[in-house]
Image (cartoon, rainbow, N blue to C red; front, side):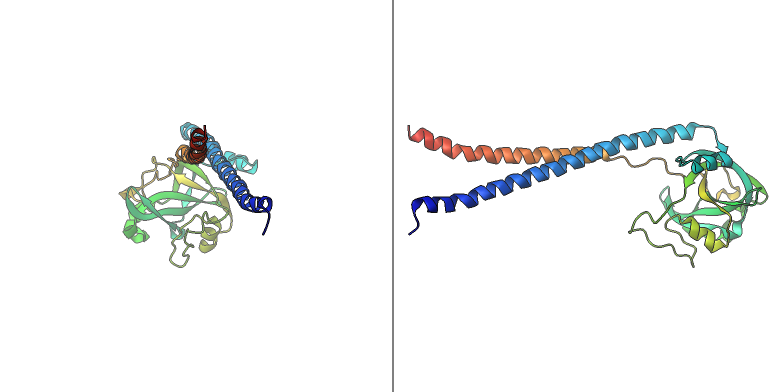
Length: 260
């Protein structure tokens, strides 16, 4: 038979190993929860700064397309910069972006605007209901001649924003994400400026459609709630561990008191 000393070590070793593994798992979980909470705090500061910047840009005076292009070529962020430009719309080449606006399903109408220098920029003229997708249902809004547009510069997307976003349906002229290259290629246009322009609410189209001023500025900002959640889970984990440690001490205290 094994000696009492060897038997005692064989019994204690697994318990000690379990304690080490449990402590390691707790510390690792705590580190992950705290890191996630801190990351959300950093995102909160970033989002608040972004919203403040958007507010400032919305209140600024419109600038020319040349100034927007200059800032873009310098690597600056042009998103939501106020812009003023003029040109002639080519309604035969409008593209339709699937969207919802004020509780209705429909499309944002992206129409190429031919500039005086011969180049083209796609302008989001606004929203039309689903049943008005075809231009024949809103001929009054197909304005002719030179038009002056004020709105917001929007950056070109480098890729589809998410895997859950459907692929664009080019044969049906339905876009689920703003692929500028596909819009240009599907219309046969070549000299297209690599940005979009959202027409603002001051642009009133005959017949009321498309309805301008559809740019979304109210960006979701739930980072504070997420940070509180992660930090709260970290605190709960510590409370559970402390409670288990405290309960594990009680039997020893009772036994010690009985032996006195």
